[in-house]
Image (cartoon, rainbow over all chains, first blue to last red; front, side, top):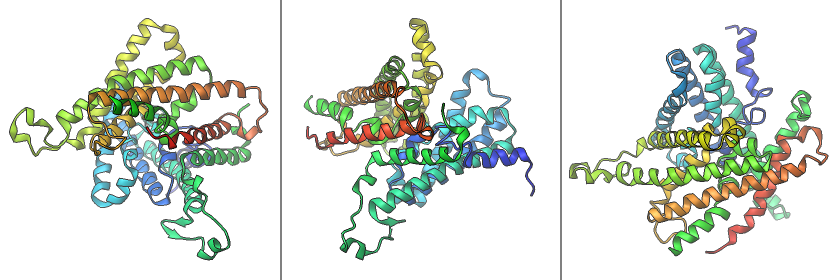
Length: 208
Length: 214
């Protein structure tokens, strides 16, 4: 299938140039809290991608029938219903991860990426474009989560996906896990560093 | 009473919404550019928390939890509606935020203008929803635990503490950012990047409260 320039922009833009987390500054809360290990981060990224894509399609289908004044409530109800479904599915098939994510699955409802994309895109575009926009933003979000979780798990506990990567002999030579990496502050500082690297490359994104 | 007070202090310093669980980060980063606006937003968040959390607590206690509807009829003893909690909680929050918005618009147009889009967005501020979800977890904890919510008094203390903790965090951040205007930050870090790192450093400072035993 060939994609036109516009669809390509909609789908691939959010991966870097228009990334939801580090450029649009949306959905930061959950991005920071679930990144202590890789596995929950990936599950969270997946859940958000599915929910953004689905809710974008639903709202885009309803966009001409929703009265302007109550649109926020309508959007919230659609999102809350989808999140409830995802949360029940996770409880049924991946109980451990759902316990690890605890309240942050429920907090997808108030994840700003959802409301942001619904308001800015789905309300004024056709279902197919909205689906691509949702997928692109979901993946862009997951990408940041995975980068942060990779560094936090690697340096914080010396493992990846729960498997030991840093060999035992390193510890005998005096290497130690950086306990600070598992604490909340490092998530913020890591995202700060990602923004630094990203903006150093994309000069047009720098603030005055 | 003692427990409620301990809960209040803990939720300000130890379990701070921003620094310990990153809730309400989006509006936190976007609005913390000057002290006055952030004070207004912090007060609005505290107020909304103080109203929504007890309502959601009663909802959880008398409608959603397993066997909570027995006051209607004994035949509901096995009914568990907790899968509806997301939808009901967010509906309560959205309705109350709408109310607050109308009150602020009527009595303080200048605050209304400076909060702009962020007032309606309190509805989707994770701090509010997160607080309700934490409440749902905490009422099931063992009553002897320092985090347990054992009654409506505890819920009020927790709501007030979380709100004030959030207010403290955003006002502190706004103060730092006002000063930072005059410092020479490397170009790629300017704005968002340095804001993240500052919050990280503040969070580290707040970590020293975690040894507090109350």
